[in-house]
Length: 311
Image (cartoon, rainbow, N blue to C red; front, top):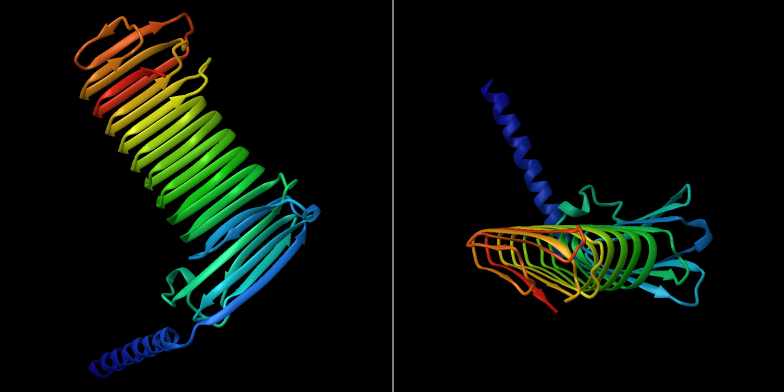
């Protein structure tokens, strides 16, 4: 029995040494220059799915092209290949190293890789991007749906127009200059959300830690923030509903002075302020009917001030 245990221990030690040796060799080996392109006729594609790990992904609007083109380049200490597969007009693109038994998201081999995606100006279908650690930059897209799922990475976008837009990040800030969507969903764990012009039919935004700043808004919003300030400014306000809840963080809502709504605001510890005439304002509660419209503004903060201001 003792001999058997010693044999098992020796086998384990040999396995550990072999694994460390392989990884050490890769870490010491020279960087490889990688430069690869793939192109597909736009009519062949109704959905694009991009699965990457540590790449920086840049989505570029190509005005004169009729092809969806992928340019994969950079430096890596392993031989990465851009792999694609088309089925039922859905293309899946990812980077692989066939010689490496380890999944890339568990492999510490150094790399500095980029993926540029060139979308024809009239491509209006679906695109989704998945990243483990990396960053996404978008010049301008106008599609049916856009989905981003990243673990530790962020988003920088100039303009996103989509019937449905869904963004999820664990650690990484979301900065969008302009979004015009029917349905917007954002979920961030340690993420700040900043949108300079936010036009939606409806939006649901959740953050665990990180501020939310939305400007020039239009539409109905359901916002939950665990810790972080929430600031929302409307350029137009009609029959729209607003629900904002924070655990620790202030709420500032700026509305046109012609806005009409039913207001209910509550805070456990924080100040209350309203530029609009309200029926009730107490230490922890503020409520009132402004105008005649029945659309609701509901604001709640466990520890933070609440302000409803006129623009």
